[in-house]
Image (tube, rainbow, N blue to C red; front, side):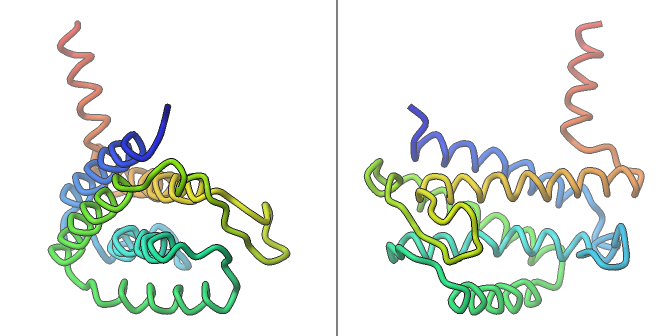
Amino acid sequence: MYGAKELAEGFRTVRKNTIQLAEDIPADKYDFKAAPDVKSVGGMLAHLAVSPRWQVAMHDDRVTSVDFASFGTRLAQAAAEEQALQTKEQIIAALEQGGDQFVTFVSRLTPDVLAEHVTFPPPVQPSRKTRFEMILGVKEHEMHHRGQLMLIQRILGIVPHLTRQREARAAARA
């Protein structure tokens, strides 16, 4: 069964790869934007460092319903927390610390807690999700942005570490 332990380990792997990516991009490229209306490299990494916090708070408090007002308040708080992360070092430290906190949080969740439902107001669809589905979404969200960041690495002339590892394995087999 895929439960809290597996979810925590899966997120640990995803976050480890995000941190490696963050380390591979030079600090002077953290202001780079792939397009005018998107987050910079540093902004995207700060977003990943901060975004799991609302899920931890919400599920720790066993919130059963999310409304637009509370979500808007949390978005504003997250934006302020992201803005506070100004340097590559601060961002990587926040990714490391936040990743460890999230893994610890997820690891202690029981199957009963993961099966609980949280409801959302219209027009949000689906109108309810399990806590498991919501927490799995944290990992999916990070992988989505990491894919964007890997493309940005290519734009910057950096071969992503996962590609370098795959190429090294292929070369070793040849």
